[in-house]
Length: 336
Image (cartoon, rainbow, N blue to C red):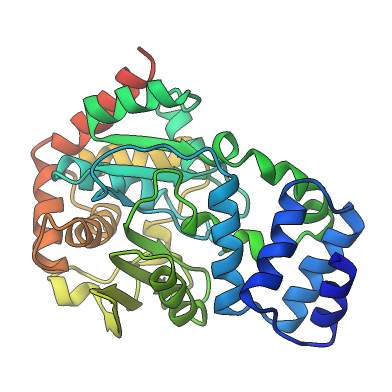
């Protein structure tokens, strides 16, 4: 019973895999009342959510999602947690297009803005894309462009059972942590931004538990869930089943450290304008930050031998117009 689970959580006791699996399955199949869901999420927050609990919940959410068998398994995702409350331009979405232009296949998972001014879905709608598609249309877009956007609400219908409780709570909960671990196309390679440095080892371990092949879990020293251009970035890397931790700085790649004001955006349209300028070859902090994140994505995708090589390739595809062409092609094909 969920009541017994909640009692254990309120006693600050961690759940094992099967207990967590039972609880989340019951919640996501509509068997639990809103008040009990609220108690469950708040008790988890109070206790502190553990690696095995996230792993179990992610497995349930993937089982409940509308999954799509697409690509050869080497496609990448650049979905992060969000939740930073910081209003930067849509770096992960822009970098996904640059990575696609550099030869990576991308299945980008995302949503509309929750804590920021512009989510990935808002950015793509501003660009003129149609983000609502059935699976056959998504496959056609992927085959034509090498990039698709997976709008989370269309693939995780069971989330409707937790929305009332989440809205009443009004703070980050377990479900803010699951999106990056539940790509509907089961991407095995990821650049995954997190809102807290404390999540780096946890998320790296969860990625390993979920059989991810290569992932960079990143958190900027300035608080962003991206590789930042304003400071150093903490990284936990999962590769060949091994996890390592290190820091990188823009200076490591010959890039200048920028000011926060240079990467902020107040609306999807504002964000789109900044990205279009970068894709047009205009040198800026925005272009440099996209290059850092796309470089990491190209490295994870196996299209570059290192992040440094990936940064060089990313700058090239922005400056030669290939990134702009990739965005335009996606918008065109998504509407066809």
